Image (cartoon, rainbow, N blue to C red; front, side, top):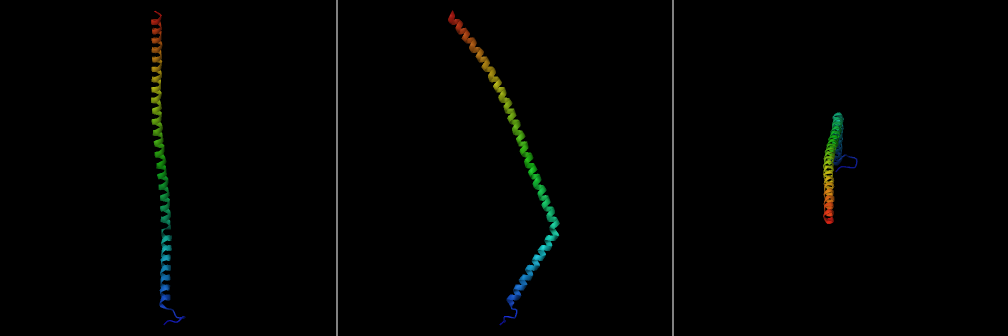
Length: 110
């Protein structure tokens, strides 16, 4: 039986675990330091990629807006033409109506 002053198996096991944890942390730190430059470069590349993805999205949105504007302008032109034709038709019908009224008035007079 171990006394209070003597190391026991549990203490040795804890020391071994602490040593392994320390070694793992050191290895992790060392690896991070060795790959820090590559990690920084990877972050820079990822940032540039996001910028270009955003640019592509903006350009596509602008293109769609231009196309939509063009279609709208074409439709306005078509509607203006239809309106002109309708106005001409109204003028013709008004003239025909006036002529028919005159003829009717003349017939009634006779």
